[in-house]
Length: 105
Image 1 (spheres, rainbow, N blue to C red):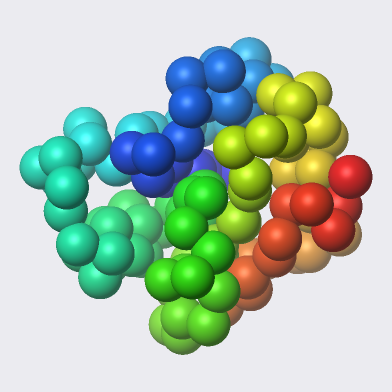
Image 2 (cartoon, rainbow, N blue to C red):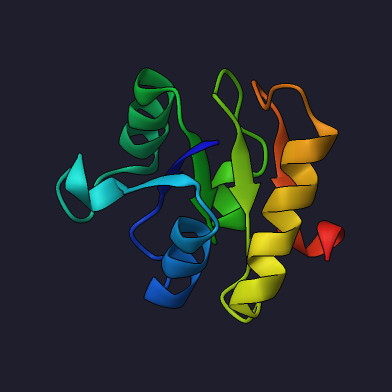
């Protein structure tokens, strides 16, 4: 799975996904720091990457995207990785799918 990780995601979560073999790219490597939510979502769509974010308020009801996974900062890295693994097995594609990782732990 190709992931675009929002700039607010802690390094431990990024490392957990990377070490699990996911193709992980941080949003601040494509966009300027502090880019708008719309710009982050557009970049994820353009790059065909599922967005991983903590920003439940702004991304829980978006449309026309390659997938959105909403985590919480308090999740253990292994829990986050396991939830993403489960979601990947459950869906053939995450196109226009928004999932809350806490529901998959």
